[in-house]
Length: 389
Image (cartoon, rainbow, N blue to C red; front, side, top):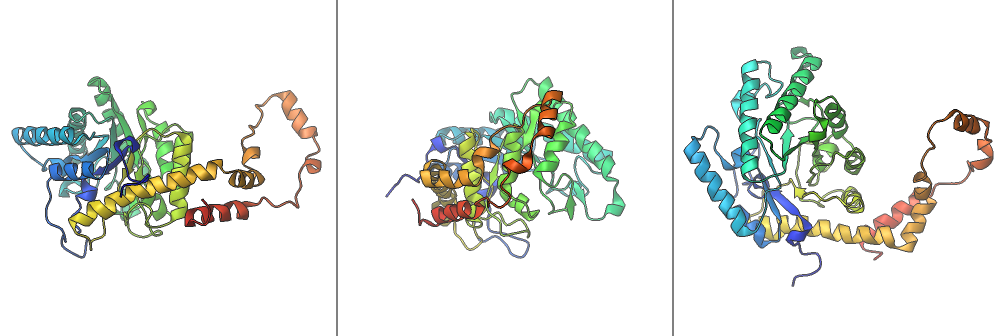
């Protein structure tokens, strides 16, 4: 029976063709699920309540396809999206699969490869425009090194910056309503990737010629791979006004990129992320960049995996509303200093500086009083576990 946690298009949940379309292959094993067409994926996503479908260029169009074939594929897919009642909230470009990018794309040593990467990206941007996607994600999967002996990172980052400036100018010249979202990852497939965390990306954006056009696309698993807190990265992106897109999934610690179903691991971090997004009034796609276990068949990919991602988000969102509204939780957070932290630091003036320096701070600070973080955390855990509703 449907319940309050079943998704609807109003929830703005989206999946990539590469996620539910993943065939169960991995570096050690062949596919466990048969091929599936993008149009079939789109129809099945609509059936389970998704709002949008995203894609890499090569998820849809084979590398090197002739223009006529390309146009035929795009029209068929666009018609399928409309027929299903979905939207395309984001597209991206694959600059990591083809052998030509084995040494990088925008940061490749060979200038011809860098120009090919720009050409491929411009074509993918045109695809985004045809599909009316407002966000274009850039993940530098091959932008990195295995050995630092081979590169000066200063030069690589300069080539990276030049590529983003070039692409921003291209979008401006075409008068497209499109924003870029940069996705960080610490490693894999390269041994070390440039701009490995969301914080690195945010600083990099500040160096661009058109920083207003560029934001970030933090991914939960990628921050966990660096041993970092995802909700802290999302918080920094929101604080900077740069959360243009988000990738939700699950990860068990700093391992290879696992891309598990959202909520499958680290429920505390998932809860804090959902609570932050809902509290902030985030209006973008709640995008799930994850894959079903290799053990599953296609029916399970939609009925258990995709539906599970969306239901888990809505369940956590309902608990976040309790956490933000119940008097007991509010009191615990007040005791932990939430209200004090909301008090701003006064702006500098000589008078204010003199007042602060003259004040008796020791008289106003109770160094023996605990901050009650344990209680706030325990109440949150009990709420997640269902002991408190």
